[in-house]
Image (cartoon, rainbow, N blue to C red):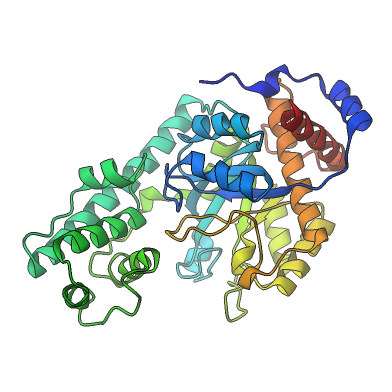
Length: 411
C-alpha cells in the first residue's frame, strides 16, 4: 500500500504560510461522489476515471462506493499519477424507522424510510475498530444473500424461457464485480447471456417480451446501458418477477451508520435527492428549514447533491440556503448506472453550474481535504470523533484545505 503523502506535509501553520505566499485563488472543478467498479460503475476501472478527469480538467475527485473501501488504494495510486486530489468516502443504505412507519420518503424516491447516507473524508488507509468492522461485514453479507436469492429467482424465470439461459452468482462476480454483486451487475449479466444465445434482433425482442411478462422492450438493442436499465426495472426492482425484498438486517439505523463513519475518521453527510423531473421533492426534503433542523439535531453538517438530476433554479436556492447556514456542500455525478457520462458536474439537461455553485462545491471539498490532512497527522479534524463539529472554524478549514490541495497538486 502506498504511503499517504499527506503525512509528510508541513504542519498546518507552515502549510498555510506557504499557500499565502504562493496562492493563486483558483477554484478547481470538483466531483466528490463517484462510484467505482468496487461497487457498480459506468467505468471499466479506476484508471479510466482519472484519465477522463484529466481531459476534463477536474482537480478533485471523491470515491464513494457502497459499503466498501476496497477501491481506496487504486484511487490513491491514480491520484498520485495524475495529481488530482483524492477524497476518501463511503456510502451506506440505512433506515429511519419512524419515517418508514409514517410513510415518509427520505432520499429514496420510492421506499419510505430508506435512506442513503455517506461518510466523507475517511482515514486512508481505511480502518475500523473490530466491533464496527464486524457490523459492516454483516451488512455486506446480508446484501449478497439477497443478491443470491435474486439470481435464483431470475434463473427460475430464464429456465422457463430457455433451459440454456443460466445465471451463476460466482460467474457474475468474477466477470463484472470487484467486490459486491449488485442488481446492476445482474442486469448486465442477463443482457449478455441473452445476446450470446440469440444473434438476431427479432429473437432478442421475443425473449425480452417473454422475460418482461408480455411487455415489449422499448429501448434500442444497440444501447446497452438503456437495455440494462430496462432489464433491471422490469425484473429486479419492486414488482419484478426476480425481485427480493431486502432483509431488515441489511439496513442499519442512521445513528449506527454515523458511529461507523466517525470511527473511520469521516464526516457524516446526508445525500440530498431534491427535485424529480416533475419538480417534486420527497416528504423529508420538501421544507428546507425542517430538513435543516433534522440534520442539525443529528450533528450532521454536510450535504451532497447530484446536480445532474436537479433543476438549476431549485438547486441554487437550496444550496444557497444551506451554505448560509454554514453547511459543507459537495457535488458529484455518482456514475453508478451503465451510462458513461462526463465527469464534470452539471445540472439537469447539462446546464452549467454558475461561479457561486462551483465555489461552494470547491470550498466544501477544501474542508474535507483539511479534515483528511489533520487526521493523517493524528490531529483533530473538522468533525471530532464524538461527532461535535468545529463549525466556528469553518473559514480556517477552507483555507487549510486550499493549502493542502495546492501542495498535493504542485508536489
